[in-house]
Length: 169
Image (cartoon, helix red, strand yellow):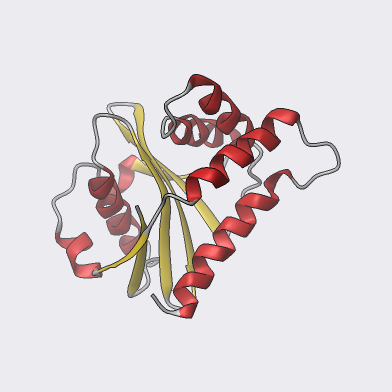
């Protein structure tokens, strides 16, 4: 992985770290951040061929995947993200932490739906020709790699997918 790709990961993590850098953060949101960042240490990143993602069959169509642009979708995003943790306490702290997200064009949140139910969530960011698809969270009905491919197709159709794709595992 080159320096720009590593920078895109560091940039996303710095943004998430700063979510609760406010005057009076709640104890729960600070604990949620701590739980989240402990998990980051176990994750890896890989460069994925754009063509591999774009030629995979769809489970979700582009119109099933929504850019988070209001609070209710942020809550759905946070709930899906929390399911990445096994312990209920950790899940509650993650929800408290991630619902603090202030939406910004540099870091886009996406939630995918199937039969009206939220089934996938991810963060997408772009830096110097690289698209980072991270924080992939899916329900038991969907595979992470499949959701990444479906999201990549949506990004491509919206002219938002760069040539180099970095995928967080």
